[in-house]
Length: 86
Image (cartoon, rainbow, N blue to C red; front, side):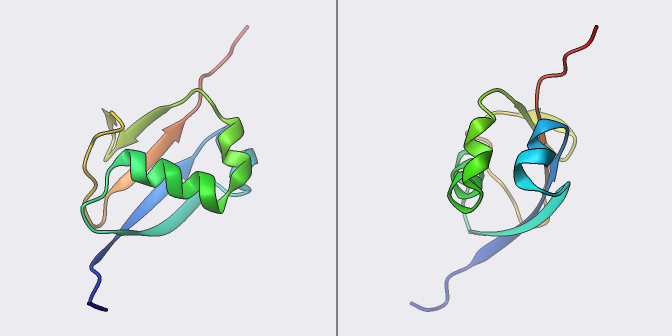
């Protein structure tokens, strides 16, 4: 059972998300059959400051996605915080 299959995803952060993570992009390895929700949980575990970002949109491969969207190996996920302007 030590043959656990994983998937690799690229995660991009913008604005406040980038500040909280400390970088604009990460490569993460997740267990196979994972969703956006699983990715968010991993981010909160590995980067506790990320939990401060309580409002954001998620895009998978440049298309908006919900938390139940299944991730595949090689996906690119963007975490997009709200933009304020003036």
